[in-house]
Image 1 (cartoon, rainbow, N blue to C red):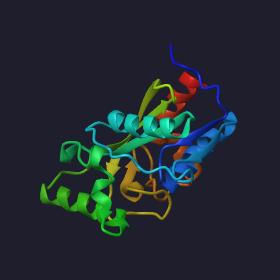
Image 2: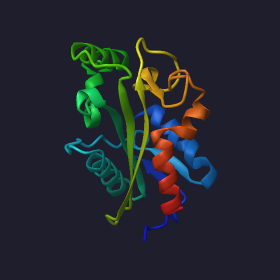
Image 3: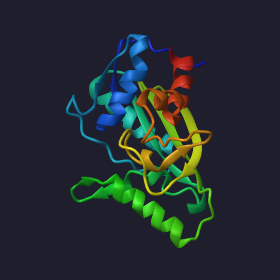
Length: 202
C-alpha cells in the first residue's frame, strides 16, 4: 500500500529550472505548492548511485531531511540502444563543462559516438524518469516512467531542455525540442512516472 501525500507543500529536490517548471505544472491541479531546493538554499548532494532510483533516493531523502517537508526528486536520462544504454544515469555528466552544463555539446557527443560505431538507423533510445517522493521520517515511494523514440540529427527545436532537440518520440513528427510544451508534458517519460505517482500517492 503506497503512502498518500497529505501535505500541501513539497520540496522539489532539484536546481534545474526546466524541471521545476514542468513539475510545478504537473502538480498544479492537485493543490500542491512546490518550492525548489535551490530556493531554500539547499546544496546538491552528491549522486553516487549507478541507477536512476538510487540517485533519486539520495536527492529526495536529503531534501526531506534538510527541509522537514516531503520532497520529490527526479532522476532522468537518455538511454541509447546502440551505446549500450549510455549516457543513462550519467546523462547530465555528459553535458558538464567548467562553466556549467552545455547540452548542445552533449548531443554532439552522442551523435559522434553513434557515427563512430556506424550505428544503423533508426537509432533507437528512450528517455527514462524515476521519481522518488520521500518524507522526513525516511519513508519513500518510487515511480518509473519511459518514452521510446529515436535520435535525429541535426538537432531540431528550441523548446524543452536537455537532450529534447535530438529526441523524436515514436509515432511523432516533431522532436521534444519542437513540440508544444503542453503536448510534451502529456506524453513524456516524466508524465508517465508522474501519472503513477498521482495514482499511488494522491
